[in-house]
Amino acid sequence: MRGTTVLPRTPCLKPKAGELPLHRLEVRAPDALPFTVGTFDTIGPMSRAAFPHRHTFYEIVHVTGGTGDHVIDFTRWELGPPQLAVITPGQVHHWDARDLSGFVVLFTDDFLLEHPADRETLRRLSQQPWRLDERAAEETARLVAELDEEFRCGGQGTDSVLRALMHVLIVRAGRLPGLADPRPPARAQAVGTEFARLLGRPDLGLWSVGALAERIGVTPGYLTDAVKTATGRTAAQLMREARTREAKRFLLGTDLTVRQVASRVGFADPAYFCRFFRRETGLSPGDYRRTGDAAPEIHHD
Image 1: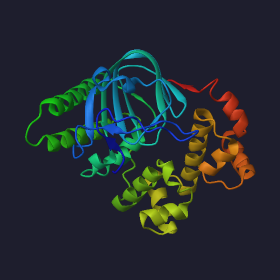
Image 2: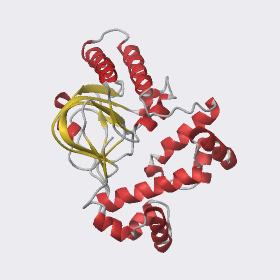
Image 3: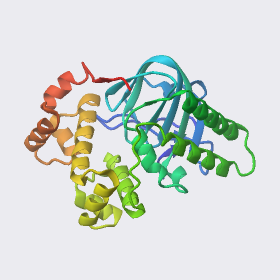
Image 4: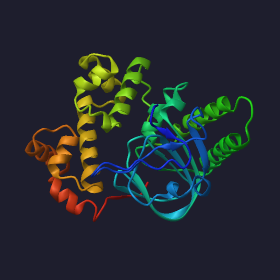
């Protein structure tokens, strides 16, 4: 995907006024596979970034040690190694942790072309970090170690091996207890997955079901039915949640005015945005900005 990868030591794009930093994936060469893997130490300081930021790529984190919190979309999740977390493109996260250790796997959407259904599994995994039981921890550690060795030492056919190992890792992670798998019809699943992916790309400015349906290439009615079949929830409900989530990101992570935040999430009328936000959260945008960062919700998975 154009613009999602850069060569090593390429300076990070300077964020626009009021925007959160957006990190791109460093690759070895312009035509290199959009993938990298390593420990927190070998990936570098940005793998432990303590400030809110976004990625143009996916990140799978296998945490094997450390204390503190992983903050995802301004919700705090207490570390409980061994633990698995997925960050999807567009999500905001940072670490408030000490002695963090483990492996980090980074890849762009292009890496999933051979197994598009993996996108939906990753989306479901991104809803929270997942503590691993002994068997899952051993299996995850083995697969990640194989990915790391293949990436560093592989020869002919390395790209295929890496894609195969990644697919196995994602499928196995999708079997974690508590991760629902509704298995909808394939076409509805594909449309639902693309709908969720586009909702995670707020830079596209698609804040209506009609606009998203046009982008996907289906009618609004079909999109509504497919999303309901694929997720068990309505497209309008997911849209409201996405707009609210994005507004929270701007309110807590930037100094944009309420009027500017309203515009960024598709509201021409700031007053209507304020009513919408209060209905969805129980707080006005100003109250949320004052209190949300001071006392973020803490989850223990």
